[in-house]
Image (cartoon, rainbow, N blue to C red; front, side, top):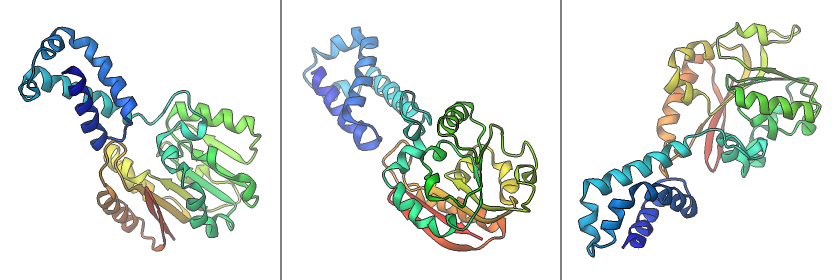
Length: 264
């Protein structure tokens, strides 16, 4: 009976959450150890429906799903390569070539890039293909990302990269600009605006005022955790932000799991 319960629970979890059967089963078995006495009683029951109705089983399932949810919500994955250690960059990895192709017309013309809330994208950026970029400025408050990015920059001798491990709004935007520039050529806000809208909405006005010729804003098509679409909600947030910025959409960006707009 226990094997049947676990098999059905794994199936149910994998339909709803972005997790493999092997990973789900591992988490379930970890919880099984904590429920030994109750589970031994379940093993004697012949009708699984009777088990499903018990408060003990419902509590067991609730704890498993909570553990899986927060496991999948973790942005940083330890032990992975820099390019795959951050969930956002990992999700884009398979479609990176297509993604870069769609913004190539702008990237090949600019010499100053400002990557706001940069995460680990810098580690997958093809600097050799864009010798025109004289300065790549990275800004992110996450110290774990900063340490990995710093190691990557040093290992690859990226002398045109400047890193700022600080919060948005900690200093005026013009303080990040090279002295010869009045505004950034292109600002990258990849999957950033919906996150800021959820967590620090008061920063949106400041973010919308960033001095830039072009801004690339993207969002997720699917939930980071569940197998469900969130594109409509993210699109509403992003279009509202674009209106706040006073800029116009000049191009739509679209890959399998990410969408966005290039504005000017």
